[in-house]
Length: 133
Image (cartoon, rainbow, N blue to C red; front, side, top):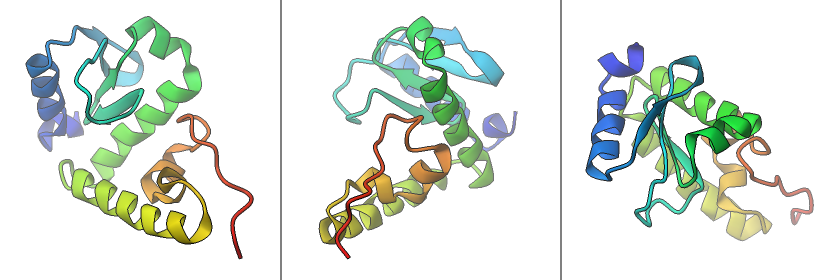
């Protein structure tokens, strides 16, 4: 409900419509835009408001409970960030993560606070344990 009011879910629905992705109802108030084909972003799944985009089917995403929970946490992060401000904050976290990754030999997502709070392993990321001192 809050992600509808803060306009992040309407943006996600508009993106799904523009990308011609079929929409399905998902768990916990999520919509799943399945078979997303555009090349960007480079991700197996990503979230805009309460809309989770996946390159596979909605059934496959729901079957991957960890990934579905990870994307649901991102939907909550949109709410906490009051909607669309989540996007520049997320990308700032990704940029900061990339800088840290260069120094510490990790991957940028492992250092993005939004990905960490959403659960790295649930999202398919492997936290690096062999970082440089």
